Image (cartoon, rainbow over all chains, first blue to last red; front, top):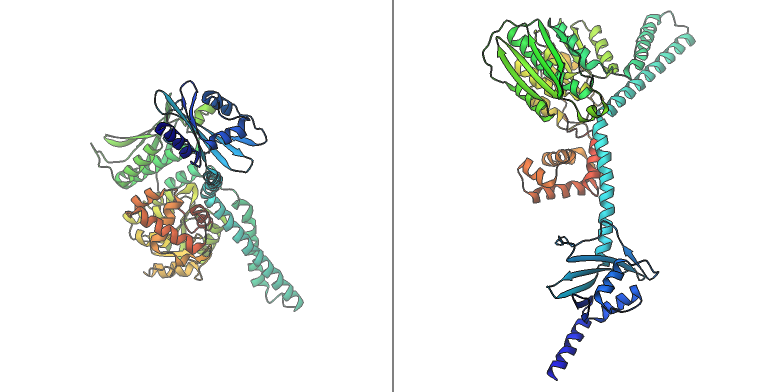
Length: 343
Length: 207
């Protein structure tokens, strides 16, 4: 009697549980199932749980039946502790009343299996919101990156626009002043001023088309011009890299070598030997300076150059053999190598 | 004659400056270049007296970094930093490098040649403040120095934990500042804030 009462009490207790619950043996025989689970499974499959294994199979292969739909979105709230999919599986369903339920199958021990159904409507809504926000933020992040990358160009264009507006104003003033002078018959008196204004405006105006394009060769040509300005010629042996990033590193090294050669050794010529091997560019920079050293202490300039090169996967070696030479190894860029960009 | 080196990557601006120098009786153009990294080399033989240095120059080279290097070896060369960016830290950085003047291309009321004259007379000529930029509901002047530090870190893509480590403050302090910044500006998240701040050139992390 006591035993019967206890079983009823247990059944009553699990029936009062707001979620669905079902315990079964490994072969699927149902040991205990509550009303809510039967009600949910009935709605999904058209019958209550007869065999847990078969019921789970049906739920796994569930096709939308108008009363409920199976949810398969990748962002669904998963149990993060579930590392072993074979002993712990989850399925998600949305019912016709818009409620969302998670069905979870667990192997409790070597003999018992549990299926638990929990209502996660709110959690699902929040996950959906979180997913949408994440996508939106990713897009914003992309836009922000593009903005950061182009900010200097944008600014340059703004400056050009401002200059154009200024020229437009100047042109307007010139026209007004000339019209006024003609109307008032004072053209001769104001001729000098007007001529100057027109010359200045036309000079500015003629510069606009040139302002749109900064020559890409500026990287090389400007440094060479500046070197000649201070009386040091840069002589290249071998073909220079074509990729802009590699050129930037090469010219950073040349700048540092040039600065040191002129400042410390009063050099008048800098030799840059560029060779290619299988891995990348081998560059040797030496000068005709008058200083003979057996070793040097790296200052801020060389250290900064070394850091910059190493960050990009390149390397720097300083050779002290009478004079000072810089040996720079710059690997081929992966993308460039893929394109066959080695020249 | 005062020998001037112009470092400016905008052709129109450079031509305008060169034209003003040409008109002047005191100044003569030594060289005009567009990449700040080449400025140190141009100064090596000691012919330059004054540099008019743009901040954001060709190949993304920073005029402020170049100025710091030049001042290290040639403290007598006068340097005037020029910019059209309202970036709030540029003035501080220019002062820290020992630059002698600072001139806003778009916002200032003082003519460039006047700044040059004053600098060559030994004055340090700096604008009183950065231009006021509207960020959301707030003016740029309403941000504290620490809030600017936080926004700069955010603009560099740092996570909250990284910001805390970089600025040597606690994670809660970072969150507190960010909450305040968002309240001031009315933005819902930091990305909106950073996008606006960068677009209006109040923060330029590369320079």
